[in-house]
Length: 110
Figure (cartoon, rainbow, N blue to C red):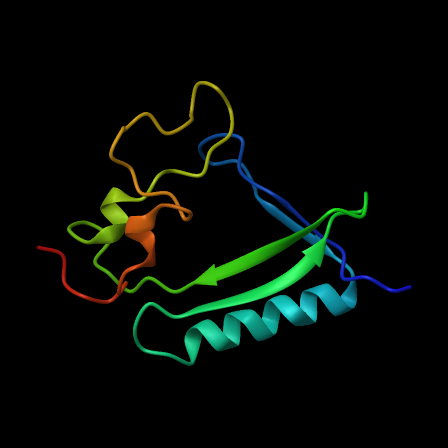
């Protein structure tokens, strides 16, 4: 049985590299999800189902956010770092799984 294998390794800290490692079919699915997110105007997202090499499946959500990076939603987004000294510390930060993330991403922030 062939499965779509995809590993995403986030930045440990500031200026570190991030990595997306996948087999061909999984990377094609990522491309399609990105194209789907880009094809819409408001709060677009593309979702695909992939697996880790231990067989555990998960959904990858590609979310387009065109808000202003200084005054808009980007200024409120949690940083993606995983190292203890670099993790997000703001209590009101918006994570991708936060309910606040599911609203219209392109609307102007008030």
